Length: 165
Length: 137
Image (cartoon, rainbow over the protein chains, first blue to last red):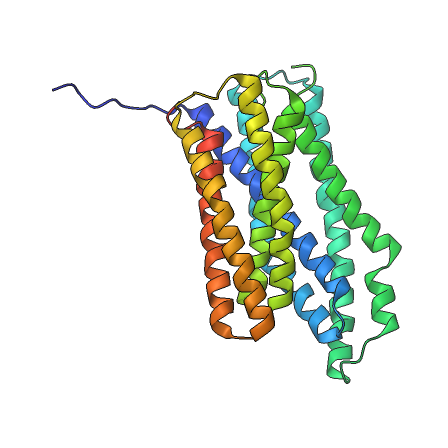
């Protein structure tokens, strides 16, 4: 009777699988947070806006796991696959990773301020408010979140394109 | 993701991965708002998942065509197709129950919708692990 075929998976394959999984958590979690933010913008009552902005917290563990996983496993893969230390696309990706997280953090603080106002308005009668609408649509806060999304998209482009390698 | 591209053409792979990530995110949002008891938001999140599903599938066939993988028998490809294609039925069933929930306000509809979305989310996790790890190749 022939011995059962053993499928071996090397370290690089494991790292790659987990790195891609982390990227899914990073981008997917960010998409989920973005959808909840858009739904909060479209909500009629402050209580609904506050709830939707609170729910963004549920996606944060997913995003954080992805953020840390992409960095640690990405650097490990860099070493494992013997990519050049001067590989520009990796350095640019790392810089974009820092930018995406910094901008995402600023956008998140803006969402927190919106949530606090929405909760206060909900407790004071839950009537639609122009002040809340203006804060939710604040150009600076919105621009930070969009810029964080664009930086994340640029990382994805570089990881798949890998210019110069 | 570093060696995901291999020598493949950029656009089909980029769009396939981006759409799959969007599908994952839309389902995650649907599960979160369904568990929180928000039928309208659940319906809206699931509607977002539909175009993402379509782009993921279309680009999967685009890559298969370009790479000559049409007759390939690899486990990772079978898992990808096995999750993505029948997944439309699960996605449509979740969307239908979200619509029923929105119209009727029945908690049972919300629980079914959250379960269907959660199951599809888990199946997607299996699919992207299989495809990125090239299981059985």
